[in-house]
Image (cartoon, rainbow, N blue to C red; front, side):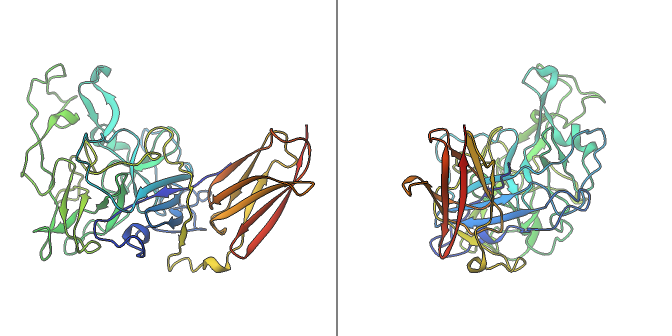
Length: 401
């Protein structure tokens, strides 16, 4: 059974009721191409859908560029079939900030996961001195500075080197992702004064303050050098361009009216600089369904519009209702999966053999699997009518003991 989906939201200055803002149009879409290193894996974002308030993006978590090998890392990348959701009207969280936890913290525009600075381990497992993933795992990153974790989720802890031109210091960097509070993540370069004009590399406001004595931690040594732990770094207000979240309020090409934006941080030699990506806590309010071990499999419960990028050339009006239905005959549960090239906003109506309507499912969307509970019905013949606009198909279902 398969699923795919992501979600994004953005924008203080977008008319969300009508515009296809950058939160809709920034995603790299693909429906057929596979990864050059893993030809069985489809790449990038499979589908982008949006409503007046939300954006939903289906993705595999596999980039279009070559990936691997990973020195010392036995894990293998796998299609994660993600469905993420982001608000289109991100808001500053003025209450208790939401910590940026482990696992995916946002999504790069190619559907690959953003991970934070930590590798989830600490010195002597004491939960005091947490390890800097770039120091401890960086030697096992591939040429694009990514690697897969145990479940095959390929991700970047640092600036995704192959996603954008990190050598271009003369133009404002593009949007390269969205954090789970709906605010954009940009590449390494922005406006020097925050509004327009000269371009500069955005600098972190964190500094390595490592001393020989780390309280309740290891002394400075060749095994535990400066910067190998997250707690080696301290935030100094105004030291660099960015705040303690690794972002700032500013104007960007996509948001001429202003927005909060995160930036990835690198040095003059294009090496990652702490804290690399959004850090510490989210600047904005975080929606449920994206974070945590089971996050990233959001179910869409509202009517949406499919965004079709120029590169795909698929018009919604020409699409049919395309799906897989298994098993059939069915004893307990059947599963219906709508393929990425299917119509959206599908209404399912289940009828028994006498023509009585026994169940209705609304707003079924592409790239998501839906479970049909047949345990409550007697054995016999049923018909599932699937309707979207002027398209209609009927699936015959045989319920057995």
